[in-house]
Structures are given as C-alpha cells and as structure tokens.
Length: 323
Image (cartoon, rainbow, N blue to C red; front, top):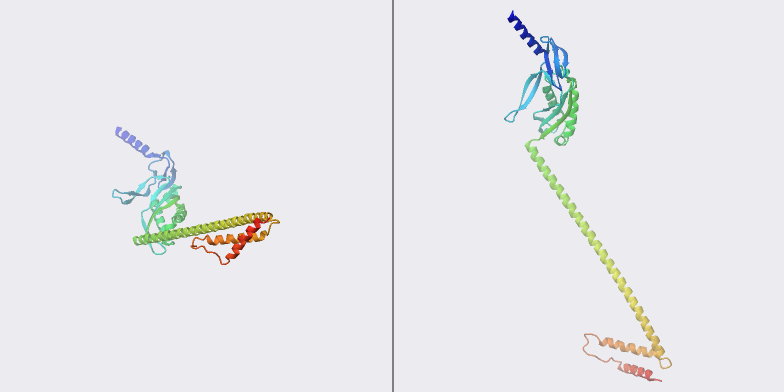
C-alpha cells in the first residue's frame, strides 16, 4: 500500500512538472492536442494537460562558426519560437551576371516571425526555406544585370530582394525587414582589369585637370599681359597728352613773352627808328649763335653774307644812338 502511494505521489509530481510550461518574454509555444493544433502559449506561466497536450517541436537550422574559422550548419528541434527580429548570415555563393561573369556574393537577412502558427505549419524548416529562397531570388536578380550594374546597384538589389522575399514569405507568417549585400567579389582577372581601368580613368582625369589648369593659367597670363599693355598704352597716352599740353602751354607763355617783348621794343623805338629791322637783325644773330654752339663744331666761321651781319649791327647802333 505504501509503495502504491509513493508511486502515485511520484506520478503526480511528474504530471505537474510536465503540465507547467514557462514561456519567456518575446517567445511563444505551439500546443497540440493529440497531434492537432490547440493553442499558442504566450510569455509567462502556462499549464497544459500532459499526455493529451504537448508542445510542437520545430526544426530550426542553426549556423555557427567553428574554431577553424569555417561556418557549419545543423538542424536542431526546439519547442519555443522566438518572435524577436533575427539576423541570418547567408554563406557566400556564386552567381552569374547578364554578361556571363561569375561573382561571389554573401548577404545578411533580417526577418521576424509575426504568425507563429503559420511559421510552424506552413513550412517545414523556416530558416532553410528562407535561405534557399534568398539564394534563388538573388541569382535571378543578378542574372538580369551586367557586372558594372551589379557593382553600382547594391541598394537597388537590396530593395528588390527584400520586396520579393517579404511577399513570398508572407504565407509563412514572416516579415522580412531588411536585406543587405555584404560583399560582391568578381574574379581575380576581372578585378585586375577593373584596377587597370580605374587607374587609367584616374590618369585621364588628372591629365584633364592639369590641362584645364594650364589653360586657365595661360588665359590669366594673357589677360594680365593684355591689361598691362592697356595700362601701359593708357599711361603713354596720358603722358603724351600731358607732354603736349605742357608744350602748348610753354609755347603760349613763350609767345606771350615774345609778344610783350615786341611791344616793349616797339614802344622803345617809337619815333626813333624802325623796330622791325631791329627784330630781324636780332633773330639773325641768334641763329648764328645756335649754329656755332654745336658740340661737333670745331671751327667757328663767318657766314658768306658777313657784310649783311655787319650792316645789321651798324644799323642797330644807329637806331640806338639816333636822337
């Protein structure tokens, strides 16, 4: 009797232990009643009826990196479904572009389970299904683009890939939030050709910039020389104008002085002689003085009409001494 009682107590303890299910925050558990979907347990303390009710096991692909640096995947069955956003790092794969270039691509996928029931009953292994769908969709998208378009259209590929995956996984109760392509690696020979092309492009741009710099320098130099020539010509013009104005003023002053001198001479010879002859004789003598003042003149000579000079001097004397 005592053994039966002890056995009954042990079975009761096991029954209670099996009937208590504690679900953590942001997790749910799918409960089946004799193999049929019954309900979904939310976070917190929950009770089930053992033997009749049991959590549904879910096959989940787990990817981990080993100590050797390689990535390994294995299937693990678990009863709790995580509702938080999950990130899945897809292994690197080879895809072929539209121009038949094989490139290596790996991607990150951020997804979240929004309907646990569909995630369990609509697909066998959700992570693996998402991975295969991403790989095939990525091959299709890259196959429509050339290599150059693929390298510069990463954001476009991310948006299109996310849209396609989100629509395809909707019936699985999954929301694809973001897709990011990590690396796009072309073959080695293509990389070498691209590096040469980029170097040639940089050299071309450098040559263009240098030519433009020389062109601008020549233009500025020509404009400077032009402006300097204009300023010089303007300065010469102003100098000539000022010089001409000065010469004109000097001539006017000289003419006024000569006019005054003639007036005074005329007044001095009034009723005493002929002032015109006096002026002619003085001009004649000044001309002779200028002729004899030259630096290269070695011999001072008397002009041919020396008698005219003497007569002019004698006439001046007579005019000055005439009463």
